[in-house]
Length: 151
Image 1: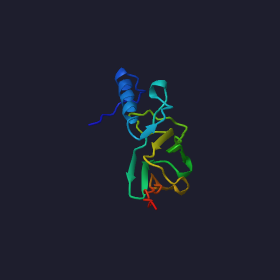
Image 2: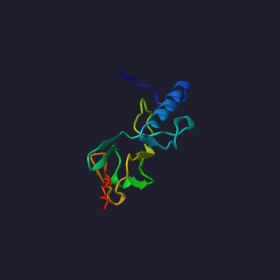
Image 3: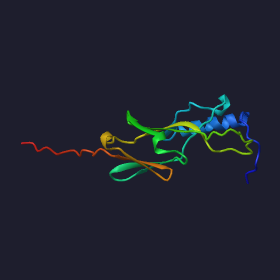
């Protein structure tokens, strides 16, 4: 059970090791995060939850981005990598509350997904509904070897 505690920047050695291990295991998957922000340096990290599915004809990438707006998301494809960037701005008010617990993220993120095979770059489609970004990347058709008859 979670307990409420006053929000502080985690700077304990255990938190540092945990972050390093998370980054290590993130690098073992086709999903990678460019870690430009780090709590130990006084900044936050965001890694949106991402699923990648494969059908016979395409790859489908779903990214949870609650609280984001379509205009705050950018998608690029380069060197067999799908790069998803986003920014969520913090609501600003005159009065700053004294947080007891804070998990919501505000700021920028970059998510890179390495595609397992070649895709049709010009046919990539994206949609954003109910806080979920869905990117569909059609596969390039695999050419099958053709038997050539010897005359």
